[in-house]
Amino acid sequence: MATYSLNKFAQPDILKKIKDENLLQFLSPYTTYLEGRGFKPKVNGSAQIDYDLLCRILMQPTEGIPPDMVDALFFVHEVADDEMYDELLEMAKAGNIDVPADASPADLAVMLWLKDPELIKKPHAEALMMKPKSFISFQSEKGKGKKPNLATANINTLESLMDVWFEQNKRGKGCKVLPFDMENENKVYFLVRHGMPFKREGKIEDGETGSVFYRPEFHDVVIYDIEANELQVFNKSGGKKERAMYLSAFGQVFFKDTEYFPNEDKYTLQPLIADGVNSLSCLDIEGLAEVRLTEVQLLFHGPFNDRTILRSKDIFKSLQNRSRNFPDYGNLVAASFQVKFDGSSKPRTIKIKTPNIASFDRKEDSHVIERWMKARGFIKPQEAETQEDDDDYKAVEYVAEAAVA
Image 1: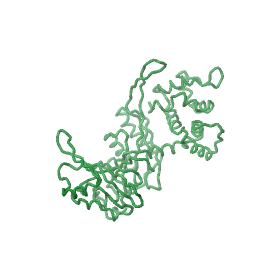
Image 2: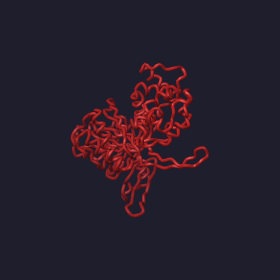
Image 3: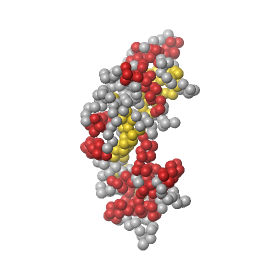
Image 4: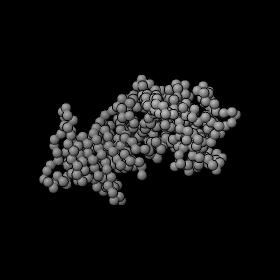
């Protein structure tokens, strides 16, 4: 069964925001399935729609539900809100769609879908990709990066490869991959929509208790950074096996090598121990004014997962003021920094968690910060790197914890 989320479209108040004629035209390709579930588009020859029955059908999809119907419901609902109205209206004008004065956002979304589904697929996917996410990236050491071939055949092959893993791991078939070539960033973004294991939840309907059984849907984002020749992966589940599957599948389809992107450690906090406050120097990095260490976390091996956290406005100055040395006990596993950018009065937070996660308040800060981390040794050098590569270095891995301002 295709992936499906219960709370997307199956609500009478949402369906009633769409004019009857638009909704009927939207549903017409799926007449066979709907009539098989007892839904009649017209009652007594009128255009009145049985919304309650339609909602029950959508709330309790069967194995025979058309995947295209799920796609259509999903995308239309995702963009059919008041905040998107002006953008939808501009898209309708660009598509030469005659928009009546009383068209609602839901009407516009349906009209755009009927005109060309791609009109709303792309802006929706781009919006999803800009939401806060945690990316873990894996840099290849096998030569220079190259622009991947985004031909439909390659995307279909990618979906088929991933479907094997998703089905074997109880997530269902029917994943969708939407690629976006961000030429201004020299990156390619891939939005991956797939299912998760089935869930059963209680419900109340007409005063009666019952249960619903459905497959939740997740949206993962995979980014290929051409300059850095690395794959940046955000998988909402956080599963290591799922992440490894992405590395293998993308490597196989676009580089003919399932091990093109190695799953190796990227970060180290050793410079804090070896170089002390000098590891925070940033005068050689254009755009940075100051870096302060504000928190470190030390892990102690043993059965109790003991940790010590030191937190201060400026750890090195605090230690100096108290005539103490930087801690040489435990395993240094995480650190937080306050970074002040040129022209900015308020510092922003950077976090490093070994072996492979770094966090930024703003995604657009990543390029400058990664240059600093590279220069100070917080990013482990790759075997294939040269001095020229150092000059052009880009993101290794990051977490964008705030939406782009």
